[in-house]
Structure formats: C-alpha cells, structure tokens
Length: 203
Image (cartoon, rainbow, N blue to C red; front, side, top):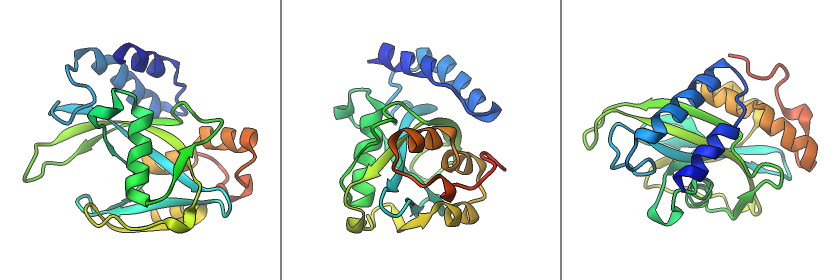
C-alpha cells in the first residue's frame, strides 16, 4: 500500500508554491517512516481530511475543533482498517464527524490538496507534524449534520463566502478555493461556480 500511496503523491499536481513545498516534504519523508499512517509514528504521520459539500445548497461543513480551538475541515487519523488507503481515512472521519452519509465526488477520487502543518505539544503527546491529504466529499443527507461532542465544539454548514470570511489560515483558505474544487464543479455540474470567491488562492 505504501507504493500505491507514493504513486498517488507523485501524480498530484500542486496549486501553488506552498502546496508544492508540502508535496515535496511528503514525498521525501514517506520512505523513512516505518508507520506512515499511524499516530505511533510520533514525529510525523499522514492524515486524511475532506471538504464536505452539500450539493443542493452549495455549502461546506466546518467544525470548531475543541483542542485546537479553530474552525477546520473534517478529518483525522488513519485506522488500521484503512490499510493505508488515505481516502478511506477521510471518508470515515467525515462520516463520524458530520453524522452524514458522505461519498466521494465522481470527479475527485484523487486528492485535491495536500498540506504539512505542525500540531502543537499537548499534555498527552509531543509536538508533531500532520501530513494531511485532502479530498472532496459529497453529503447525501446534509440535514443529518450533527455534532460529535468528543472532539468538536460546534459543526455548521457555511456558504463558501462565509467560510472564507471566517477563516484567516491560508492552507484552509487555499483548500476552499482550490482549482480541484472548481474543476470538479465544471465536470460534475454539482456546484455553482459563482459562489466561489473570485481570485482563487488569495491570502
């Protein structure tokens, strides 16, 4: 599975210099990780996350993360059952955190974005890096959105414009305006491109 994942990273096309840097780091660090998808790999491990979209109202789900105290996309750590298939990680995390039935977008089975970011030290674990691989998922039953109180303070549907007005963290802003989202919208006909903020990956 590691070879398949390495090929996935080799095929990914970054949208800007920041994402390109994250991609280079991922490609370089992967061969040296004994457990690349396990949080037991203390210094850095791969995670899976997702932009979850309501295709009927063109809204995106964001959660207020309890430990990080920030509004974020859905996602988290891999489980052994994922067997190194990081898209399954994004899928099960999105299902757990939204309570919705979610599925991959027909034109976005490969990642739309990657990002390397530091997770600060906590009482139960040292500072470490998340090597996050991000997908586009569709909520089939958006009205089922519900809060998982174990890790989140709130969860809510936002228009893309409202989400971007709320968020000042560049990697998430890049994700929400990513060319992969726009490409899927054109090919799949699910999103109204007019609801994306013009200008793409503005900081």
